[in-house]
Image 1 (spheres, helix red, strand yellow):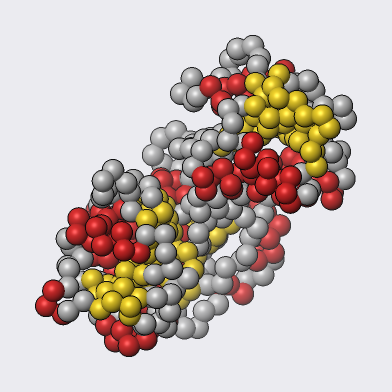
Image 2: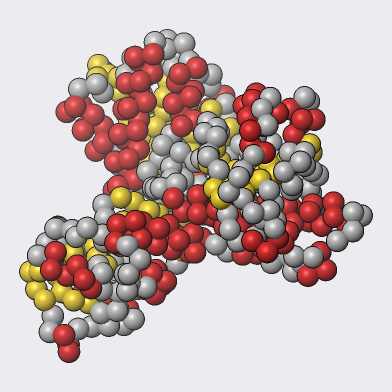
Length: 480
């Protein structure tokens, strides 16, 4: 490999992987940036590629870890030989706030560390970390080959890696809890879960829990009904399994499978390791034992918890003139209302009025206002929220009105792809100061709107044009 080809080849490898990693994680978790630092050889300078400014603000930590000390250049266990590209010696996560990372030493790339952002609504960080781990392996593999043999397929692998990332994490947990001898095949189980989730029975999507256990652990279950071995329904017969899901719908029971057939119905007792598909209508959750791994809907896996974290709202309230305790209580009130609306699968609008004297809004005004700090009043508000119109909550933590109509003049910031509830909130906040509106749609993420702007929809980075990114020396980047 000539010195002239080497820089262009490395740049292409890095760019392909970053593009695939960012695209894949964006579909899995929402808008996701990616970045990498690496040193090709023990004496090579540390390089960085951060096209979307993911690592901005962390310069002091990188300077401390990789420039002020050279300890990272010493690894006595490493055989620096391209033939050993698949032997990855993992490195410690530097623990950067808001970021996930995975890195390692290998025979073809002395040091590398890949980064992406830690979204607040992940069911688990496990699949994302497996994704980053695969990026490490792909980069090591690509640089072990000559430039003429490079296929550019790593980016495509990483873009379509969602199901594999979920499977890899489940296998890791299975090996940890069961050892290496399990006969459970995870890929067919994941395929079955997605197919069953999309199979309707009399117009309804499945609800209930389907438990997958290793055959050696059947004796750890308390079966209420156990099917005869020769009559057990096969898991691949999705329509039949969907009908059987009716037996555990909205109950504490499990429909049990060994990954090949349906064994019977058990109570809530779990063995040492189990994989559970918790169907909740149009979406559901995949769990290892009782811990969520990911969610699924519309024939694909994703990381969302389907419960809004409302990070933007929390930040706005903390930055407001309100006392810290008042900000906390208002945030808790709104989160409770939003989660109730999401569980009941209906949309709603909540106006948070931080003005000293609440603005006048057309609707059902309450006199006197209701104190939402009282549990029974908050429960009443959860019923009122189902009525068309918005709830009007003041800075005093009282409910000042419901069924409120938000009006305002049209302006350039509207989104014609969204409905009347969303655009009314944009118009209203554009014309009123100290107002925050939270919009819950039944089919979209929760929106936090202020001053005519959807804060969740504001893009904090701009994707660079073109296919190839620029590589920086870390010492130059830190000094910028």
